Image 1: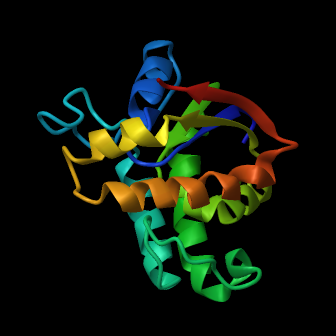
Image 2 (image 1 turned 90 degrees about the vertical axis):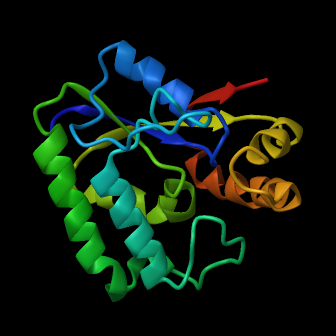
Length: 180
């Protein structure tokens, strides 16, 4: 694909929806099938491509993992054959929904857990990706989490594991957004 992709990285409740919503207002394509918002949580929407997010969830399950799993995965997990089917699904959605867009974005907190796999998919498709990491201080995350899930200590723990895994991006990192 001959276009520009923006991959928004950040854990749940870190401000990724607000950031992606802003990009959408600026004309960045997000795809046609997005998750709807929920009153009192993200009323304006999550700005997540539902097919991509669902496939990411399936890929995590194939790895016996989940978005909030803090345990390390086995060496070279992103190359395992169990993920081939899901990679093909992701590639199909990317081609179908973004091949004609000049600039498009994907936002799904699960990508933090699947980042090396996503980088391989993007490389295989010849997609030039820019990575934007959205960070909110752990203390404010724990307060926000109480409105949706009740495990503030766990989310702070995840914050310490999910974002450092993004260090693979050190040479590709284009921007950080720090929400206060």
